[in-house]
Image (cartoon, rainbow, N blue to C red; front, side, top):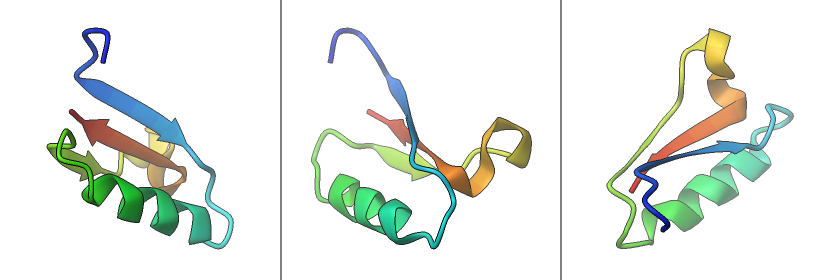
Length: 52
């Protein structure tokens, strides 16, 4: 993964359907160590922070 240990995926808030799909996909990947929602001032529920 080119030396990255954290990824920020911006999917927006909307209805939450895309967030649910993205997080569901990520939880099935072995390389993913954790998934977090950042604080509101960093995007809140419109962003998923992925630890790899």
